[in-house]
Image 1 (cartoon, one colour):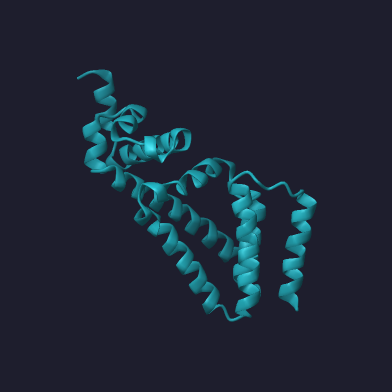
Image 2 (cartoon, helix red, strand yellow):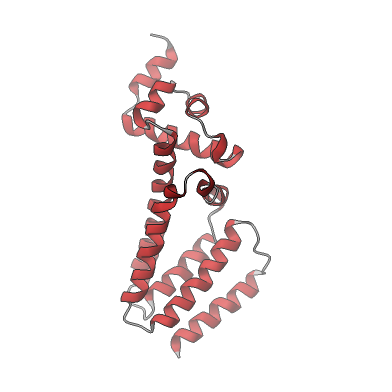
Length: 191
């Protein structure tokens, strides 16, 4: 057995899947989702094409796994921020403010991938379903909040605007301007 095969044999399935997803993400960011092929992922990951197909039997399954991974990241970020703000009125809005400030928008390591996600629609709109479900759940949380739903919606949507500007590297507002807007949102919530 050569050194590469020994190394591959010692990896767990979870480790291999993680390596494959990291390779797929790198290709999607660098070259676009259209250029994401099983062969390219196998080469980038240093595994055989059969190894990729064993874990992800199609390009669609691979992209769906990337989308699921991204949504899991969003869930983790929101839950972390909600835990910290659970005792505040308008906890959801304060959680979004905390999340935005902690990451200064979209974390740099997720900006390129976040933008690449939206190109998935051109490949197959059904692959966006995990993200659609995340937003359906978010708006259900807004509806279930005990506070004024309109204020919660306004706060969350304003912060989503900042996140989207950050995602596409289009946020030319200054830190002072962003702080002022965040202050206005907090002021609105106190009324």
